[in-house]
Amino acid sequence: MPASSPPTIGIVSLGCPKALVDSERILTQLRAEGYLISPDYAGADTVIVNTCGFLDSAKEESLAAIGEAISENGKVIVTGCMGGEEDVIRAAHPSVLAVTGPHQAQQVVSAVHEVIPPAHDPKMDLVPDCGLKLTPAHYAYLKISEGCNNSCNFCIIPDIRGKLVSRPVVSVLYEAERLVNAGVKELLVISQDTSAYGVDIGFQPGKWHGNEIKARFFELAKQLGSLGSWVRLHYVYPYPHVDEVIELMEDNIVLPYLDIPFQHASPKILKNMRRPANDDKVLRRIENWRNICPDLALRSTFIVGYPGETEEDFQYLLDWISEAKILRAGCFRYEAVSGAKSNQLPDQIPEEVKQERWHRFMQAQLEVSNELMSAMTGKQVTVLVDGIDEETGEAIARGTFDAPEIDGNIFISNDGHLQQGDMVKVSLDEVDEYDFLAHLV
Ligand code: SF4
Image (cartoon, rainbow, N blue to C red; front, side):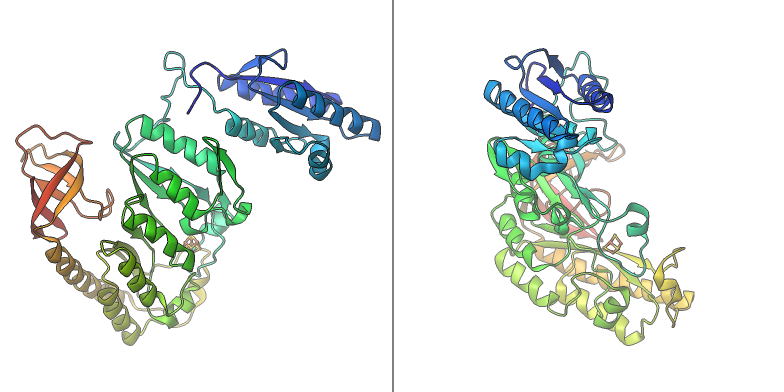
């Protein structure tokens, strides 16, 4: 939990003027975030030791300063030139909380956040504790990483945004906790490849409310699920390690919903696309997921008219969405993106064929969706109210099986007392294309 009074940081700055400037930069940022600077060890919540590693004597002085800070205060973050020799520092002082090198002000500030997060002062801060949001107050997107390690032929995101960079697990969890404390009832976890979370940082653990939590997809999902809001997982690939997350769904820890951008089903096209996790066992994996969690709802996106897609490949896709029981799907006609490798592929598909396949896909998907939705009518489900229709007065809500903006809605007759952000139980009465009509229980 964020501290109620401003947290206080002590600093010991050794070495040359360049190191001094680094210390000033770190303190400036911490002060701007509301931290106080302590002149002594006793008053500090944590102490930063900015070390010098120029000569052996300077290294000895640095190790002695770290030792003194540990014995006087106990919570010590080390930075500066000697930070390049982390193994030497940890051998002498195993209890240091974090070690960073020179000119790594941002990493030091992140390490401070992990030890003691900045306090929010509602009278002084220009932004609310949960940050500024463009979404309604009751749901929020939570970005857990940036970039992508895959290299799909039609995509230039790795060129634009670079390789996967996962956020530290504690930083994600603090943000999520602040959002839930501010009234958010649904967290939508997003990234380019959510199931790859933490791979780039060796699943580096962090301390969260006294427990060590690994930066791993499963652990992150489990902790997010403990905050008390709905947790919806987007952009997940069907890797084997996703299986354990399905168990969290069956245990009501995260929503029984997975957004998996399959893009296609034909093994030949998936290979031409260079899609991750494109093995032919995906249908079996999905079946196994449904054995664990029968209520699992799958949403996906698909591309039709990819270079080389034959009528046979396309028919394979239509059969596949029916067998995989995809509840919600978006479909795109393949488009050449400047810089994408797929532009060079032979057998580009004429526009009219793409268009015709798109219509057939949408019709087939509507049938799959309606069959699944019809099987759900009569059920009682918990829904989250997104808003009130100004003309009809009906409440517009969603169940666990629908994400905001991209999936379907549930329209509930409303006697005027339902409001945005309410969570209520309804009975699903009728299917209307992609939506349900329902009444309050
Ligand atoms: S399509 Fe998705 S998984 Fe593939 S490279 Fe682009 S961002 Fe990565």
